[in-house]
Image (tube, rainbow, N blue to C red; front, top):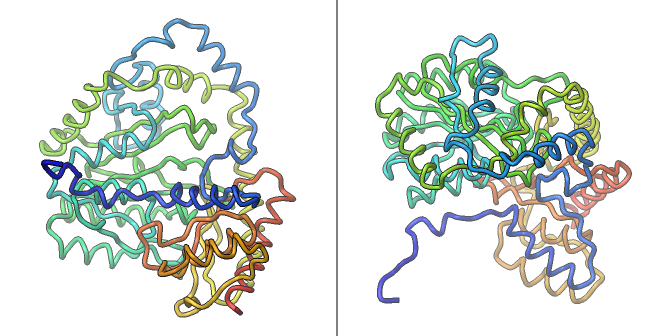
Length: 432
């Protein structure tokens, strides 16, 4: 090319969750059945969408208005409905004008980071959800800025680490929180959320809180929404229907903006995000239309309870199985539908392997595991032997070795097989 047209931050745009699919597809072409444990899609893993949800959607389709544009921020009645939910019992009140719809949280994440001033950085958790860490790093053209989540303390944020990094880097302008957390499945206590808000207030920062799993909690744990603790700090909450209904294919998410008028710089930034959204006209209309009817439906509460009970049962089985293994760190999952397993320091090396009887598959795995991260090496051998596709922890902008697995398999007999098989292969691999 006459000029270099490649975006400065292009090398930061990585998404291990889907990149490993190429490896899985290659193995499938070699005759191996693949069990996809990489993607957080409940429908793909067999969860049935209830008929009452389908009926509400069918009714919306019959209305010509569901085929039309909607206001750029989203449908007025839906935003009013969501603002009322957010405001119940809260000191910090929002209106419908503080809610903007996007085509999924991924779209919101892209806009939020892309329209930050290039020099302004947002520090996020490690391990990180890849869309956030890649999006923020790509906007800056630099490596992501991270604070640690501690596997020896239930994967809670290391608040001392967070404070020190903010204190030592004047470019940090915001803090990212993912609660309930992906990839760890941790739900942060209210005191942790309050302390993060105090740090933001002390250093005059804003907060981004990804709350897409806000209502997916179990084992007696309840999530503390950012709106409960935000006080006068500027903040953005990200929410949606992709996981909670579930309807990931709807690509319907929104942000709730807190305290926009308390800082002129933050207000101008939000207006920039809105103007960028305006260039796209609006987000998809039909999913927005059905949100009030779905959440008002008498079946919704029971549907929600039943789903969380299923995740609770699976989370306990996985924890009880993995906790018996020497050489790993595992915590009880209490939210979302993931579990992260970390390997203890020094237990992995580049000589370990699993025996693969199929010569073609064995040669392929041996080829792709040359000079890769040690947890990726384990993940590839696990995939080549069992067909179980998990995601290496280093793919989540993390220095620790480990992997993320889902709690989504709806066939419980198959789910038990997945967890027991992975546990057995961990033992075999560490002893090889």
